[in-house]
Amino acid sequence: MTKVIRATILLAISLSTTLSFGLTGEANLPKAGPKPFAVETVGQGKPILYLPGFTAPGSMWKETVDNLDLERKSYLFSYAGFNGNEPIEMPWYSSIKSSIVDYIKINNLTDIIIVGHSMGGNLAVEIAAELPNKVSKIIIVDALPCMLDLMMPGVPAESLAYDSPYNNQVLQMDEQQFKSMATMMASNMASNEDKHEMLASWTLEADRETWVYGYTDLLKIDLRDILGNVKCETLILGASFPDVAVAQENFEKQYANLSNKSIVMASYSKHFLMFDQPEWFYDTVKEFLENDGK
Image (cartoon, rainbow, N blue to C red; front, side, top):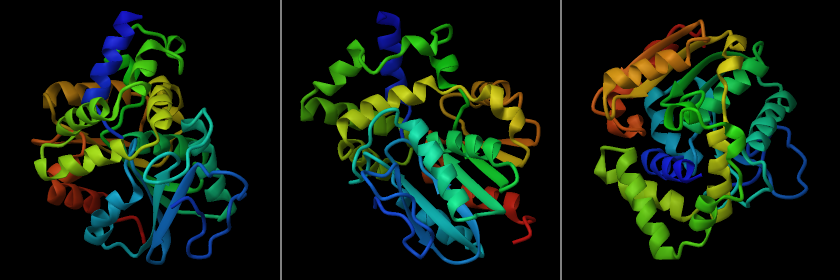
């Protein structure tokens, strides 16, 4: 258990992450109780879904929306327990995934492009695998199908529980301790120091139990076996930190079962590569989407 706690702390340091529906007239999901996500829409046209990572708000994508300037309707998602959204009961991640799938079906969204960062990239894979006839392209930004295999090789997902010494320790941290951890994490997630305070604030504003237990959900994710069900063209963008060759090898290995893919690495970039290399990010995404027939 000591190994698991130590590795989990290292992973937490090295990685990141308006509860209403139908803000512009889409059909609503059931309204009883807190919802797994909120969505804001911008523009008109075929749908492009922007899925942030753990703790991040949908608004993190607004600069991307403006710079891509696509003739599409942008859906900016935010998750329960973060950014002022009410928390939901556990399991957290699977509830979010199922609810986004339901939202797509209820609103009859088709010819969908999905852009997902970190946890949002995992969601993109799951949605594309479950709804292959509705998703045309996905862009995965610095996300791996199974973080646990990379960070804690040999540790079974079943050994990770909500009630654990590490989780209990984080739940009991006072505000200053938690702030120190959030600040350290932020510095490891972006090279652009101007973004550190914002990244830390997302963690500090989070519902503490959602942050702790939701992270446990993320560590248990293993999507490698469903990659063969993803039929759409996929662009995978990876951060170069701390070593680009090692990072690319990890992406190649973990996405081996995904057939229709391109893997491109961002230079001089940490986890939030859209903040570290924004122009490169916009240009690379535009090139990938330019022939999508919009």
